[in-house]
Length: 74
Image 1 (tube, rainbow, N blue to C red):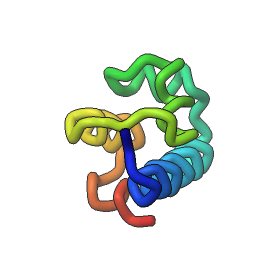
Image 2 (cartoon, rainbow, N blue to C red):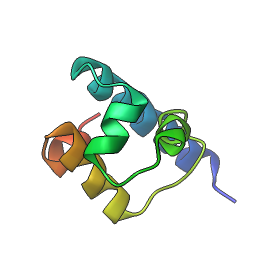
Image 3 (cartoon, one colour):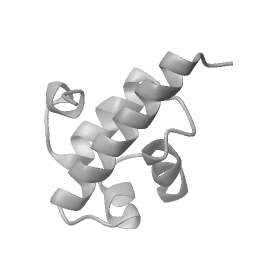
């Protein structure tokens, strides 16, 4: 079970992911096509509902065409 601090982090990450996706004008499906993540899971990540691995973050940075560092700047 995630602590309150961890839940807040996932929510902040998710909000940043949503903003980056919209900034790139990508739908869930378009982003899913650019990275190896199911489109239904992208919504869950953006809402902070599920945790991710470092490999998931790498896929998001690849799909958004940004560095991993940029993905984590929030």
